[in-house]
Every structure is written in C-alpha cells, then in structure tokens.
Length: 72
Image (cartoon, rainbow, N blue to C red; front, top):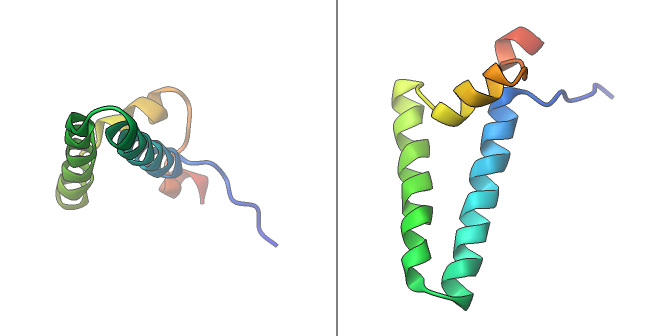
C-alpha cells in the first residue's frame, strides 16, 4: 500500500474542513453569526477552484509542505 504524504493541498482541505465544522458547532451552541465564517470558507474554496489562488496553500508551502506535483 502506497503511503500518502501530507501535502499543502491536503493540509488546506483539512484546515477548511476543520473551520467549517468548528463554525457550524459555534453557530449551533453560541451565535448564528458564526455561519459567516462557513460562508467565507466556502466562497474561498469556490474561487480557488477557478483561479488556483489560495492563501492557505501558499502559507503551507512556505512552512515547508510540498505541493502535490512536488511530492509525486
């Protein structure tokens, strides 16, 4: 079985997923205004699918995580 390396793209999806789940929990238990964070993350994921620009991925690459093309 091939090992899966943690790349900047995988870190970005993990970060986005944790932000979405966290903001949904905060909206449920505290204030519905936390849903604005969910909307922001969703819109950022949507625009990055078209433009290829994602600040989180850039930050992870500066931290030393390789991109999918470099890890292959």
